[in-house]
Structures are given as C-alpha cells and as structure tokens.
Length: 338
Ligand code: NAD
Ligand code: WQD
Image (cartoon, rainbow, N blue to C red; front, side, top):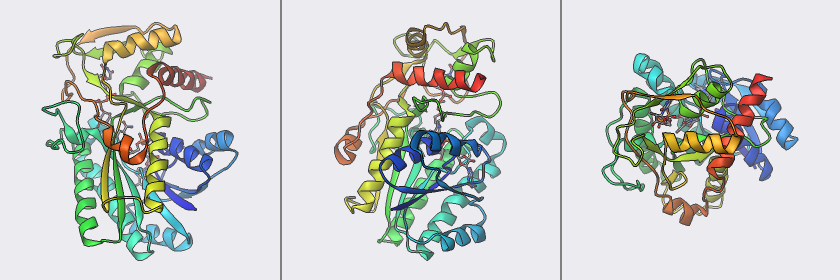
C-alpha cells in the first residue's frame, strides 16, 4: 500500500517513514528540502534496508503538485508533515509562513479530490492550546489565540480541515496534536538537524554538551511550578512516528468514527526544564553547563497532554522513557560531530 509522506526527509517525517516501511507500507516522500537534506534517505535505507521513492517538490506549486499525483497511481493515504516550523522566525516572516503552510495543505487537499485519495494525517501541534486554564489538556480543551504566526498556521490548517471535511463527506482526516517531540532513532542514523542556532531546548542542550554552544540558558525559574521552571510534555520521536502508523491504519481500515478526528500525542506527563537537564545528566553521565536567565517572550508556563483518547481509539501510547530518548538525542549529536 502506497503512502505519500510530505516533509518526509524532515525530523518527524524521516522517523515516520522508517516505521511505515517497517510496518510493510510502500512510501513516496515529497519534500523541497528547505529544512532537511537528501541524506535522510541514506539513514532511512540503513535502518530499513529500503530506500524510499523521493520527489523534490515544493507543495506550494499547485501545478507540479498535481503532476506528481498524476504520475503516482495507487496512493492510499497521505501524511502531511511539510511546513515551516520556526516559531521565532515566523514572527519576522509571517507571509512566508502563512503562504507556505496554508498553500501546501490546500494544494494537497485539492490534489486528493482530483485524484481520489481520501485519507490524510495532518501534523498539528499542542501550540493550539496556548496556556490552557486546566491541565492536562484534552482534545476538547478550548484552543487559545496563537502566540505566533506559525502557531496560527496550525490553528487555521485545523479549521481548513474541519470546513473541508464537512463539504467532502468521503474524506477521512486525522489531525495529530504533537506535544514536544524530542530524541532520535536509537541507531543514530536519523535525527533532528536544526538550522543555525537552535531555539528548541534539546538541540540547544546537546549542542552545549558537545561544546558548540557555551551554555544553556534556562528561561525563567519564577513560574508557578514545583522548581519554578516551565513544564512541557516531551514525546519521543519514534513513539510519535508510531502514532502515525496506527492513524494511517485506522483510516485505511475505515475504523475512524468521524471524518475529521483529532488526537493529542504526548506522554501524558509534564517535565520541567531543570528536571530534564538533571535526567539528561543522569542518563548520559555528561554535565550540562546551564544558567537561569529571564523568561523567554511568548513562552507558556506549563502544558501536558491527556492522551486517553489516543490510548483508547488508536491503541497507542508512549513507551520510550525520558532517559532513553535523551540518550538517543545525545548519541545523534555525537554522530553529527564525527
Ligand atoms: P522539519 O522542518 O524537520 O520537517 C518539515 C519538512 O517539510 C522539511 O523537510 C521541509 O524541507 C519540508 N517542507 C517545508 N515546506 C515545504 C514545501 N512547501 N514543500 C515541500 N516540502 C516542504 O520539521 P519537523 O519537526 O519534522 O515537523 C514536521 C511537522 O510537524 C511540521 O508540520 C511541524 O509544524 C509539525 N510539528 C512539529 C513540532 C516540533 O516541535 N518539531 C511540534 C508540533 C508539530
Ligand atoms: C521547551 C522549554 C523553554 C530553549 C515549541 C513550539 C511549539 C511546538 C514545540 C511546533 C520551554 C525552555 C528552551 C532554551 C530553555 N512546535 N528552553 N532554554 O517552546 O515548548 O514549543 O516546540 O509546533 O509550537 O513553540 O519548545 O523546545 O523551545 O522549549 O529553557 O534554550 O524549554 O522556555 O519551557 P516550546 P522549546
């Protein structure tokens, strides 16, 4: 069964391609390599023994997107990862973010109608919840106004899916709201490749330990949390990848209960920045040079997922421990140094 994975050379996409291939699916990756490299294919091939088909394509180009769908017959489903994802950058380049993230989704949806592909899994984000009034957040927790243009693209994409699913009853759509994806494949053949100075905690931390950065700044210790640092739900990227495989299977087997379903994908538990630093040190035996600084603008205090729905409906739950995912992240960083 042929699955198209847009953004499949990226961080989460490449791990998902591995899991799909290991589950027996045939994968075609579409990516314009704006935030990933073709070497991801080598990593995927090393792990699975299969080099996935690859098409270099900018999904904002509707004509070329349609040509691609025309040339690949028998597509069963799509996983749409392709998007620009740097929160800070989106504040300075809002039009680029709206244009890329919205047009690529709309072109994929239009091509699905034209070429009669009904199933799609979409990458959404816990960012749509903002600072929720009650924790953990369930899928019914009201969304809050986005803090950034990037976050807003995810909320608008969810709205597009909701409207389109009402208009096109044959569609089967799943939006997965990822919490904070971290880690790397345990083989260290694939992982995260941040562009320039990382904004996210884990790549910044591992680059600090590797000596690329002098010190990790811990943004704020005056939050209303047990140790004062902010809390997130860090989900291992292989666990996250597996959630896509079960979502795809649910759609292909027509087990979905509505034509748009939304699931939280997290561990169900919150971890503070300092807890994470300490766990990294214990798991790897490496010291993390860090210093408390002021809060980062736009950060929320705490969020973690209620994953009951994904547990029950998808039969999925996170399995990789925080220690293991942090060891994998470090192994990947060491590999990048070589
Ligand atoms: P990534 O940047 O590693 O992967 C995204 C891929 O999409 C890249 O390979 C990029 O080259 C490609 N791409 C972007 N625009 C494209 C276009 N117009 N045409 C074709 N390819 C295009 O990011 P990731 O961390 O793997 O994220 C995957 C998805 O998950 C994104 O939609 C992101 O918004 C979402 N998400 C990520 C996180 C996170 O923290 N990493 C959290 C929640 C949601
Ligand atoms: C995690 C925690 C920081 C860096 C972002 C996006 C969100 C989603 C996931 C895509 C926070 C602290 C960080 C550092 C620190 N992405 N931190 N020092 O902000 O929770 O979420 O990625 O959808 O939309 O906003 O992730 O990894 O940047 O931060 O202390 O150098 O680590 O303050 O508490 P965040 P993050």
